[in-house]
Length: 372
Image (tube, rainbow, N blue to C red; front, side, top):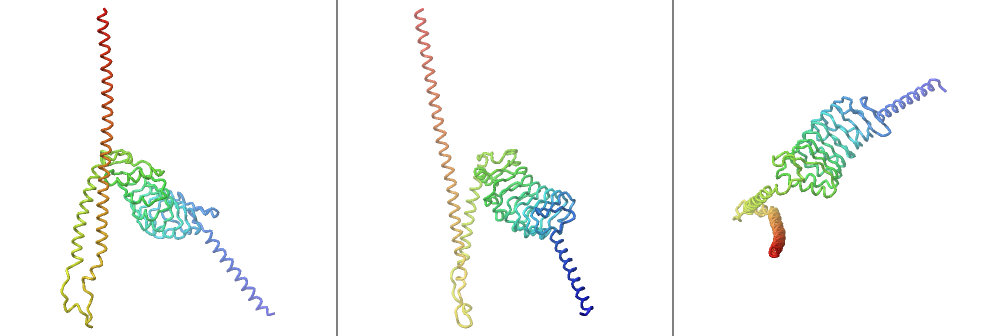
C-alpha cells in the first residue's frame, strides 16, 4: 500500500470528524441557547428575564420556550415580530415596564399564547390587528394603563377569554357589544376608571346585571360624572334616573326612521328613472340592441327592500318597548291603588273600633254617676 495514500485517508477522516464535532457543538448551542441577561430552565422551558434593566426584547431565546417573564424592566415598545423566535409561547408577562407603542404585528405567530399580561405600562391604544393572531387567550391583563377605549376586534378574537382586567385606565364608557361575544368570560375588572354614567352606559348596566345573574364576577363601577351620580356604583343606580335618556332614545329612533324613509324614497326615484325613448346610440355597430340603462340600475332594488324591512322591524321594536312601558306603568298604578285602598280600609276599621271603645267608656261612666 502506498504510504502517501494512507496518510491522505487519515487526514480526510480527521477533517470529517472535526467538522462533525463542530456541527454538533453549534447545533447543541443553538438548541440550548439562552440570553446572557436571563436565566433559562431547559426542563420546564421557562425563561426568566425579570428585573434585568432591559430596554428591548432579548434575542437568542430557545424556540421551544413556553413561559417568558419580562416584567420589571425598561422596555418601551414592541416592534414587529418581536417574538418570532418563540412561536410556542403560552405565557407572556410584560408587566411593570414603560411600553407605550405596540406594533400591530408584534404578537404575530403566537397562536398558542394563553396568558398575556401588559399591566402597569403606558399603553394608550390597542390596535385591532394586534389581537387577530392571539385568538386562544384565556387571560388578558391591561390594567394600570392609559386606555381610553377598546378595539372592536376584542369580541371577534377572544372567544376563549375567561379573565379580563381593565381596571385603573381612562375608560369613560364601554360598548357592551364588545363584551357580549365573550361567552366564556367569568371575571371582569373595571374599577378605577372615570366612568361617565349617562345614556351611553345603559346597555353596559343591563349587560352587567345579566353577567352577574349568570355567575360572573365583576368589581365596582364607580361613577365620576354626572355630579348627581358621583361615587355611586352603576349597578346600584335605579333606572328611574335614566328615564330622560330613554325618552331621548325613542325620539332619536323615530327621527331616524323618518329620515331613512325619506331617503329611501329619494333613492328609489333615482334608481328607477322613467323610461326614455330609444336613440341611435342604443344600438351597437353590429346592429344588435344594447341593454337599456334602466335594466342595469334595477339591481339595487333588494337593498331598498331590506331597508324597508329594517325600518318596519325597528318601528315594531320601538312600539313594543313603549307598549311594555305603558303596561308596566298600568300594573304599577293598579297595585299602588289596591295597596292604598287596603290601607285606608284598615285605618277606618281601627277608627271605628276606637270610637266604640270610647262610647262604652262613656256609658259606664254615666252609670257610675247615676249610682252615686
